[in-house]
Amino acid sequence: MIKAVVWDFDSTIAESAEFCLEVYKSTLEKFLGRRPESIEITSRFSMSEPGVLRDFLGGINEKSIAAEDYFYQRHRELHPVMCQEVFDGIREIFEYLMQNGIKMALLTGRTEKTAEISMDFLKIREYFSAFKYGSEIKIDKAAQLRELMDFYGISNAEVLYIGDSPSDVAACNQAEVKCLSAAWAKSVRSSDLQTINPGLVFETVADMAEYIRKNL
Image 1 (cartoon, rainbow, N blue to C red):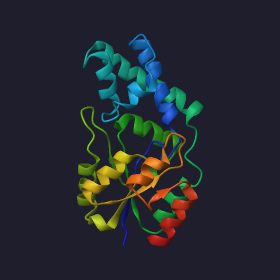
Image 2 (cartoon, one colour):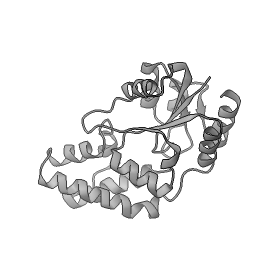
Image 3 (cartoon, helix red, strand yellow):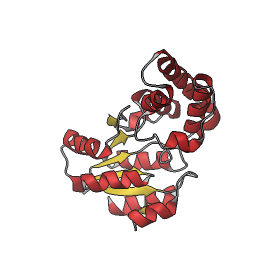
Image 4 (cartoon, rainbow, N blue to C red):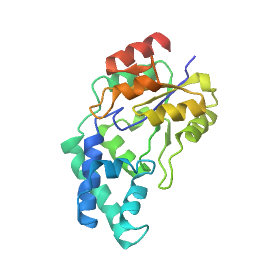
């Protein structure tokens, strides 16, 4: 019996990949002096936002500290323009889970600050009872999943993780947790997910909602 559902944020709850990349690019254009290519940024996504900025800007220094403050400012400024709402149907899944007594946690590679900005803007913070964020050094979602199981006092058979990337599947395999792969965002390559997580890849929010209703 499932007692908790743990959610990734970007490209799972909201169509936020292009939004996040633009926040990075506009920040680095100001402090690095050029707009980096998307691959330069995404290749550093084993770290949270401060780690990415520091890697571009030579570590912790006056420039990277100022860039981090500006990054959060840009995050707030661009949210209403580029990431206005959660995916259609996500809020209904949240409500369904809450009504059925299922705990929900957020587990994201983002830093706490940007996650809170987004949760408050999208008005979804109230749905979650636990939060795990990224590290500026290295993100370890498998360890964080185990911490959440300890927090809720549940076994690996009683939790689901919902995320959009192959690395989410790998982390779930390490933690021996079932991963439901969200493949509805424009940035997601469904074929990659099908290869490593066959039978548990969902092209639409509605398909996942049906799976959840049938299997909880």
